[in-house]
Image (cartoon, rainbow, N blue to C red; front, side, top):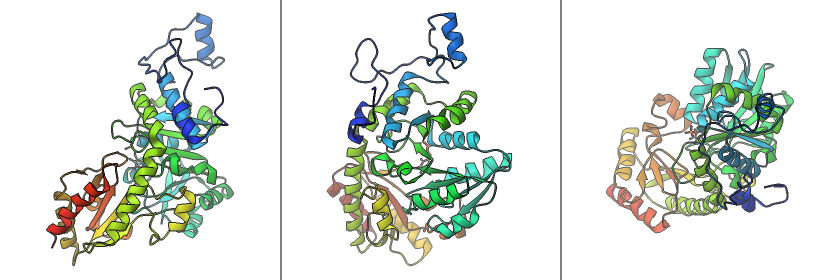
Length: 401
Ligand SMILES: *Cc1c(COP(=O)(O)O)cnc(C)c1O
């Protein structure tokens, strides 16, 4: 690829990559190599000194990984991207690269559970301070900012309730405080939402989710300016080594070719399922940004290209928390076609009970504060026929009668 600037998203999704090798392969090559032969000793010296571009060792770069980075940067509309071994290692790289002891981070209390632990517990051991705020309360984000605040970290929409925060407003708050805004874009993916268009400085991904989209590999990435990637992230990556394997990069690279098709199809299917669930007597409430009943529906539609994403949650009707848990388990245990699986971003539909899995370590009070009841079921909607997904859920709903 020479110039990617004039091409459309769907074209970039299949075309952005490093140039083919001398063999002219049409599908991007998988370069399984840890080292690279140098033409001359001088060339080797120049590459190590950073005077010449070129590969030396795969902890510092690999052509297949570069293809994945070029493609994701093109889709996010950022100058550059650096791939990591998982989504969590992308956040670790972000924090290691941008923060030091005494710095402060503001982030939502509804972010991914391991993100809460990584920033709030692991980095706290090294003197990084942090404050959590309610996802959608802009005044709380503003009030949490201190003179030593260096980073605001947002995830939108969130797991499992699909709460949406206003990226443009958070970018404003960050930039007035001379801090950076990073956005976890796992749930929407660049097919639906490009956070830098709203002013975010860094986009973080778990490639494990919709970028691969077929539940095969772990991967992660940070998308940002070339200056930030080259000067901040890459040096830390070379010393820490949470690199993405070329094989996993290749899988994600090929996954991205169908990203927008999948995101649109799975979002449409999620919306249809959400409407159907809203009408069912066994369902007390449905949480999905694509529904007009959702508190941030208008904002979600503006920020997410008119789609709600592929993840929805619902509460089963129940008289008490104990009964709610038992009823949710009944629904899950009657599934025959779709999966009981605590993952998302797959072509297969995956259902999970957040209160006993992803949010199982929270106290009941913390769970209540987060709005995650014992009757809540999350559905990461896949590509099976809608009738079959509904039939699977109906088996469970009928068992509740
Ligand atoms: C899965 C996920 C992560 C972590 O990614 P891994 O690839 O599992 O390390 C971070 N944020 C969100 C929103 C996720 O869904």
